[in-house]
Image (cartoon, rainbow, N blue to C red; front, side):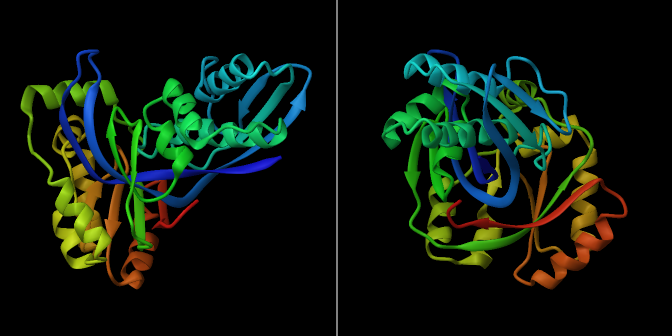
Length: 279
């Protein structure tokens, strides 16, 4: 079986506080993108997960999902998973999380498991904070540590230019620096309203990410990328998740297309995608 694992982006990310268990209480707006990893999963004599691009750790998200499903549903089968990676690591686009979500759905079909959506989210939460959204994979308000998924009523689809430098951003370090500075608060309600109303001009003005200032301090190249994108005429540039992918938006897709050709000369990962819809 071959399945697609779609990347996500954030158009809003705010940190509301810290829970008693030490996890951050988040308030975010996420959307799926047209960028995806391709995953081949077949029955095998033993469980094996491999990737064509990266050396993935033994205790990776896909392996964790396979073992969790085998334990919870007494599955005796073994699975060989091959991941064709298109989503960069440490990019703020949930590459590992979406692979785990895709494998969950694939094994459900292969093993003919009837698992409710709520139970899928419960399983996903045990693997990682972004996995529940990747199971859902359409416009959503995402809260808590990522397990609270509230659908956003919109069919908005936006073109977006993704640019990622070779460096990544450590999520734990970014959160630590945020605690030291607490640089900005994000009006997630207002951002959601502009998405529901499809008010693109207003959306470009209000969408924001509270981790972006600290990420730029950690890796100044993000400022350089933003400047390069804006020099290409891109109307709004912001960071996804904890980084290090920068997203460029314009109401004129030809501007993004021209910028893609120009920025490909300088950066290794430059992709023009669509965000929104259902994946």
